[in-house]
Every structure is written in C-alpha cells, then in structure tokens.
Length: 201
Image 1 (spheres, rainbow, N blue to C red):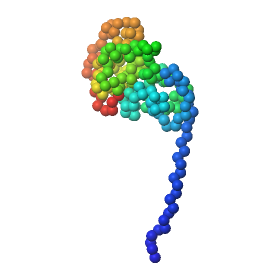
Image 2: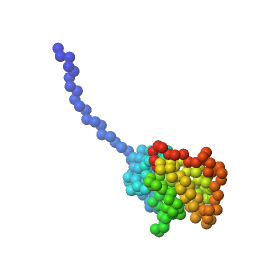
Image 3: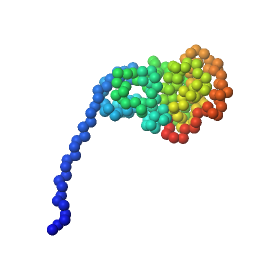
Image 4: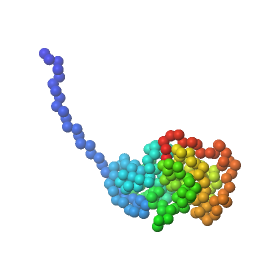
C-alpha cells in the first residue's frame, strides 16, 4: 500500500481587498480630493500622489526631521502622520513657501548664509525653523539649537544653519541679525548640536 498522500488541489488565493478612505485637504494653497489607503503616510501621499518631492523621506522613523511639513501652521514629521489624519486640514510644504517668485525670508537666509551642503535636510530644517520663529520670534542661539534638535544634518553644518535662522529672525522682525548676541551657554560644547551619524536628513 502506497504511503503517498493524495495530491491536494491548489486553492486559488483569495484576492486582497484594500479599503480606501476619501480625504480632502489643502496643500500649498490648492485643495485636493482623493481616495487613499488608511495606512498611507502623509509623506508618501505628498510625494507619490501630489508630486511634492521637496518633502523628502529620510529615516521613516521620525528621527531625522527631513520630512517636516506644516499641518495647520505647526510643524509635524510627515512620516509619522497618516494621510487620513490630514483630512480637512491645511498642509504647507517647502514648495509652498515662496510667494510670487520671491523666496520666503527663511529660504533667503539659508541661501545667503550657506546653510546647506548636500541639501537633503534643508526642506525639513526650513519648515521647522519657521515654526520655531512663529513661536519665538526673537530666539538666541541656544533657543535655535534647542528648537532644531529634532532635525539632523548628516553633513554637520549646524553652525551655518543656526546663523541662518538668527538672520531670518532679524529679517522677519525687522531687526539686524547682528543684534542677537549668543550667550556663553549657547556656544558651549554642552549645547552644541550633535554630529548626526545615522540616517540623513
């Protein structure tokens, strides 16, 4: 008697059914209506659906800050926000900052202070820095470093980034950047931004 088991007919795989959710949001001043999977991250929606590739994917773990955008005027890391959570809200990306061909003061300050090297972290840095100045229009160097501690620069160009934010603060409040004096605590090694050795952004 054969001990071979009879062949079992292959069963057709059940077709995967993916649910979608209707969302509506305003991105950089334009309203979008779309259907998305509940699990889609906001950063992927912005990049893949809307073509907003200025918002970059860095670490996917909310550590680097490269994907920072504004949600109703406040900075969020879009790799930690679902697209459905932005339903009914307003999103601003780095691509929506310039008005009538003129750079935002923060963008201009980053350019003039050479506050970028590879540029990968720059969009997130700019968005976070604007939110920082919205909350504290007249920061000193220490406040800027603390306000940007969630955004990493792989090129370790923090000094020029801090200088650019202080410059932008002066532009946005009508005072000279030279009026801002760094405190002794601000420039001490204890408060210096760490060198980013992990995922860039």
